[in-house]
Length: 501
Image: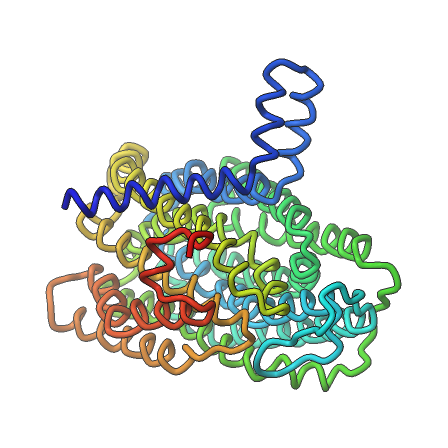
């Protein structure tokens, strides 16, 4: 145990040193600011213009939603409406999956076009022979037009999916809430807001692909902060279950205007939106996106199945302890920790286009370790502080017991780590994890259902099932293959600073 702790301490120090090296100029400016008022101003401006600051701000608002919004929902909604709110969020998650289905590939292709790539490949990395090749403005314009048409179709598909299948899932339990008509109205507003948010997504995808990570993070922070504020105000005004859906609809309209304005303003000179070569680009995008989409949609189906199994087995009002625990551990802690790597994916894609595996190693090593360490600290705080705080807010409601929260944190940590490496592989424009992840998610639902029916684990079944199924393959295979894809073994990468390898 002592030796292991020493290794972990060394790793933590190396990760911090890596970050310090990356931010050397920022620290120099900070030291000058101690003696120079103008230096202090420059330091503030420097921080203001970093992607890390704004992405942390965005995820800080996610944390604030846990601190402010979650307790308000916890206190003001009865248990049956807490369950309905949970199911609304689970179902609206299909919008984020459809966005992520295409956004990673489109953003990657935009990065390729910035490096001067002339032809997109359906599989493998599109490369350039000249490292300082000019931006391919024609390809960027075609990708912008393709993305717009594609996201319009996705929004229509989402409206059909949620409007028919989501409503059929929820219809039998609308009457179990205190105000069925309000519940139906809240679901209708959630449906419209989700479709509008999805359609606007292609513009933010382009900003990220153009390496405008700072601007994209600023816009996301502004929209999410407004949504949080409006949600809190509407809850305090007594709108109940309608509060969050109405806030989402209002901010979706604002996001549409902001995203279009700033995306068009930041396109390289000479880029004109066109649907020319739409079918060809769609054929290039489709082979990997349908695989990624199937993976993401299967994850949504797992959560939806958990909600349905819970309501069938125990009735309305029993699922929310699992869902809110999941939101705190997986949603808030994982997303905040993931900032360290999230802001670097556009650069990773560009390094891939030039075949610089060593550059990828040096870029992501400190970020990965800081991500893992940050998650550990946040999860420990959530497990320690979360249950008593929410118990104080509303004594009759409770999260999962600390044992299950700890096991959920382990599951989230392993999931986050394998997803990181699967994303590294995907920057090669391929998704080899497709069948394994799909089979794992299907097995997860079957195992969870069996545990609910045959054991006394209760909601713990929804933690044991994905953890056990993930350990069978995904949690060890994709880290191994992901490290190999950048020219190193997983063990060597994790314990050795790449600059010295």
